[in-house]
Image (cartoon, rainbow, N blue to C red; front, top):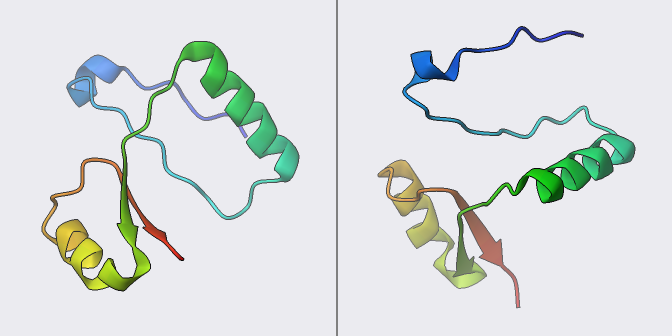
Length: 73
C-alpha cells in the first residue's frame, strides 16, 4: 500500500516510529538496513524485571522519552 507523504513541518518536526504485528522477517531486515544507512538513533531506558511496576509508572506518567525495556535475569 502507498502511504501518502506527510509534511513534517505540519507536525512541528516531531517524528516517531511504531512497530506493527504484521511485518515479515524480510521487512524487519530491510528496515534495520535502512535505519543503519540513514542514522536513526533510538532512546532506550532499561529496567530490571523486578522494577516492572516502576517502569510502568514512568510510562504512565509520560516520563519515558523513548522505549522502556524490561531485562530478565
